[in-house]
Picture (cartoon, rainbow, N blue to C red):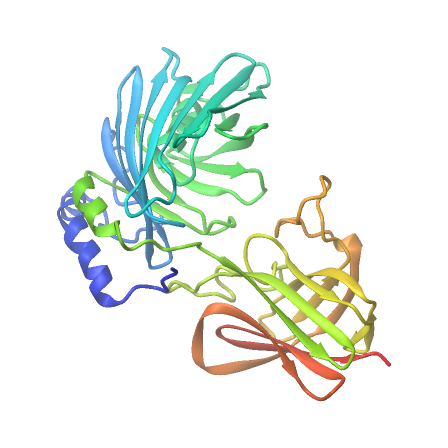
Length: 414
């Protein structure tokens, strides 16, 4: 089940849980809610803390952590696709590098995701992992690590684990550093590049040029994180403490579902069958076009994997013939209203997998056609694509999100 940005009662319930922590945070000089880089001053070094991760107006995860010279321990509640809690512990070497990670995951409501136990051992040249889930046999694997490149265990939305990386960068004193992120179940690590962006700030790029903007305290622990330039679009702020048991009770039956669910549709026009497959992000209280979707940049026309168009007959869009076949669709929003739809021939990556939405290749463009735009009378919360009939051999690709409607007419070629 998916929830759009929550009604006032839901936000009020969360406020009741977090209010003591946020009030304490404000008394220490922080903003207490919604600051782009966190609610605690950068010099407020502390061996404990808590993180609130938001996606727009939705709270995605809450985590409580404790650091020492030899270990990091944490507990995190995550609400997507179903609500679960992960407890973990990381063993640290004297130089701050992670050597051993163990985590237990349990669902908060029902049986999804399945309870599991994860172990990651990080050595000089490899990271070995093991996953035990339910009564299934353990899965094991390893990934190579480059000599001299530090590695940390990785789990999505964990700012505590992310802090292991910024601690290393802070301790090194260098202006840049590369760190391998070792996630259980992977054959290759994600590579993260940290660049100093100020006395207490780093720009952290993970697998893409667009960075997370991170502020840290004197120990290198994350104070706040802003991912508006990345595909995740999350915002993290640190608060002194939270009541994890109360949070578990609150979120047990209020999962967010997939953050951007996949959807598909098919329509028939004469002898032609037109099929579209796409991801459906939510507004979640955010400004979309000119905000999380920049103007004058190529957008994946949805979320996650690239949007796919398939037709079994030649069609004509904007005077250009689209031969029968499979394509990906990309959009260039414009602040002047001159929007473009790109029909691109590349549908798979180099390994033959579905194309991720950041892997646009302009050399594979088949056509660029004008998009007719309009201002909608009511906002559309979840990005929506429809195929509208306009006669026996004609139709229109219709898209809507926020207050913008987008239309691309087409005809079936005789």
